[in-house]
Length: 295
Ligand SMILES: Nc1nc2c(ncn2[C@@H]2O[C@H](COP(=O)(O)OP(=O)(O)OP(=O)(O)O)[C@@H](O)[C@H]2O)c(=O)[nH]1
Ligand SMILES: [Mg+2]
Ligand SMILES: [Zn+2]
Image (cartoon, rainbow, N blue to C red; front, side):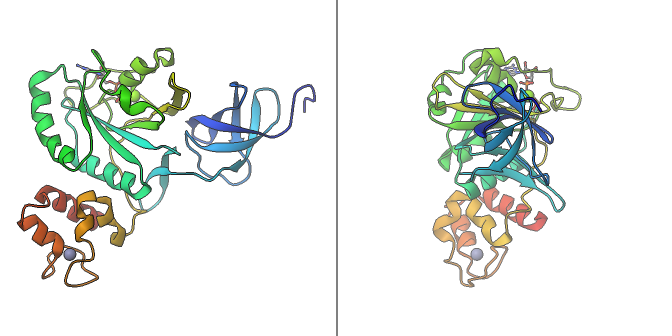
């Protein structure tokens, strides 16, 4: 091992995650290429770690600091961490390719379960007529209190700027929605690859393959670009907790006739009554049912 460089432990922030190998930024703003010591524990962009430098430019991660939030998805077999310590998730959707409202609902549940703020960006607003129809679908989420920002990453993103200050934000959504295009406007030197969507398949091409964190001008603002997701598994959220992921359900939870009510047709279910009275949108109860049955 080289002895010509400083080998005392340093703290750092994960700025890129490639499978089991991570790029870590240390306080002098240089980066070290690191692996995790011992058993493979997943890390993600935004994680704060302690590392032992080994050879110049390289180190071993010894410890992960406690995370304020952890955004991840899971199925019965594995968990996939998207980002750590983020304060905000920016769900990027567009009229073309078409977006899945179920995926939005799944992201909302994941975010609510971690206390992560959500904003929805409706990108490609230059596609005027399809965007108008997409905005109508999204008005439900706006009525729930989630900001819905219409913009065109190819023209003007200024409406998004005020939401980024003093946040660690992660851009998430299906492939082809324009996450990396948006990132490149915010951080031109990032030069993230972007690619044409497939019109035939009505989908993106999964262009981004790894997650990367970038700093914005304001030193307390960071933004993470992530690969497009097709499915957002919520296996880690218990059935009893699922309803808490639906923000407008909160006042009704605990008000049902049966205290173990699953809100799937039991008598005197407070959520069903709220739907009948027009206080909860029937689409949202429908998504809740879908998640409950698939979980
Ligand atoms: N018309 C229009 N097209 C856009 C806009 N923003 C992005 N695009 C196009 O959408 C396509 C996909 O953009 P990307 O930035 O690669 O999408 P992504 O969400 O990063 O996709 P993945 O990395 O696969 O998850 C590219 O052809 C972009 O040029 C926009 O505001 N308007
Ligand atoms: Mg991308
Ligand atoms: Zn109920």
